[in-house]
Structure formats: structure tokens, C-alpha cells
Length: 150
Image (cartoon, rainbow, N blue to C red; front, top):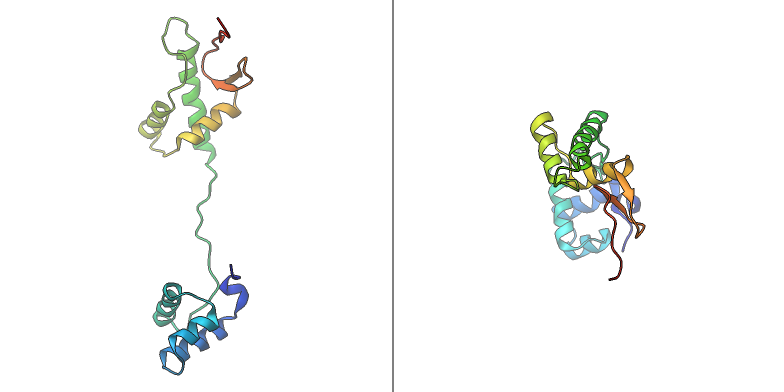
């Protein structure tokens, strides 16, 4: 795999090659070979250059989304896990494990916040809502001894 464009070329070099291609001084194969791009990627660069030749740059900005959740969402997850834990700890109730989808739905309804199931599960495991069973696995829910063998 070749190095990324912004590491191989300066803006002026790429602009010069694209400008020479657009003015038909060089063929497409030559331009693609000089830039080290395949046809589809080459035309994406040409499109970007045509849109704003004066502001063209090979640098890019990361558009990644922050994967951290805010403190308010974290508190709401813990609050809903605690309310579910009360049901689980009540021996008269047939509930013995968390319903993470229900917790996600409650967070969506009550607080109008979106959170993934994996986030809820990881928060349950990070807090005191888990225990370690005989098989040394961390489990969320009511402790139930496992009968081994017959």
C-alpha cells in the first residue's frame, strides 16, 4: 500500500499534475501514474480540484465522531441500571437478568438520548451491577449457582 497523498506530495505538485491533465497536456494514464492513484480515486481528486482550484489541498480533516459519552448520559445509564437492579434483586420477581434493550428504550423515552447496547453493557460491567460466577465469568443479573455434573 502506498503512502497517503498528503505525505507523498505537496499541494502545488498535485495541483500542477491535475491542471496539466485538465488542459490535456498529459494523458490520464500518465497523471494517474504520477500520482499513484487508480481511476476512481483519480477522478475524485479531479472533481475536488475542479470545484475550487484556488483552495485545493491534499490535506484532509478527520471527521471522526467522538466515542465518549457525556456525563449526563452516563448518569442516566447508571440510574436506569439501578432501577432494573431493584427488580432483579427482588426474589418474588421472575426477572433474574438485565434487559438491556429495555434500558436503552427507557433512556430514549425518558431522557431523549441515544446510547448503544454495548455501551450499556460495558457500564453495567464497570459498575457494581455484576458478579463473578463459578466459571469465572462476569455476569450481569441475579446470582444463580450452576449445577455441574449430574
